[in-house]
Image (cartoon, rainbow, N blue to C red; front, side, top):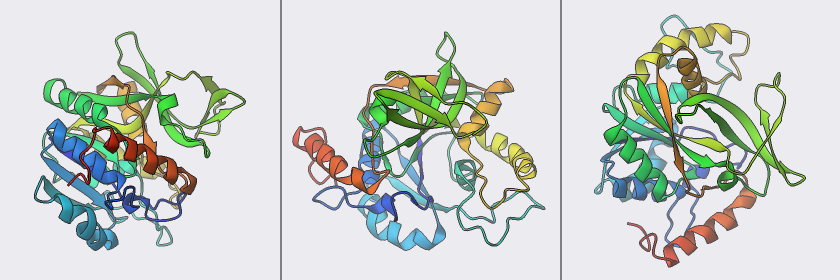
Length: 299
């Protein structure tokens, strides 16, 4: 099983390269905790998707710490990764989104793999759930999403982007509404990123996606096939548009191409969406270490 780590984002809201922000007294980053949990859950290869200019800093920090414990590969997300005949304006600097990032690893992934964000702490329970699904349930047309109760994924310092999940009676995903989620006057409000849609209230146990998807490598063919249409549909917005994996998954469900099982998880998310989040994350990780949930120093 492979763990694909999406680490090519620019971290604009945090104001820096937050994927390698030290989070404990031993110099570990959030990403270290994710890899530690993944190894414990049985993953045997990690694939970092990064910007090429960040290769040395990743290799000298995270990579060298773990390369004797799990197989490590690096893949570059480049703006030039496009369908034949397409181009992007030279002024654009930001990568084209998570779906393009996953495509960058097309030649690296095994038959089954999970994806995560580099800057989110998912918790041991989440990796155990993902590993179990990959071992027992994933198929070419059956994927999974490890979902969190929304209240376990929020910060007191502002809104967070979450995929609000809708499911059928069998626990299969029917729709992902990418939204900005925040607490307002004692309520949890989701504001769809599609501004044409109205905001809505959700309760504390509403399942949300943290981009922890469990895939069969068949997803690559779908991503390849849908990429040209995405670029055509966004030909007037090529400086800002993003080819996002939740959007593609939603479309595949609507087209009856795949089913996606929602795997509920009671884990608590920690992340540094804003600089003000860091002290809480640091103290939370320290408590987990002090409670024996993680080895001191990890590696």
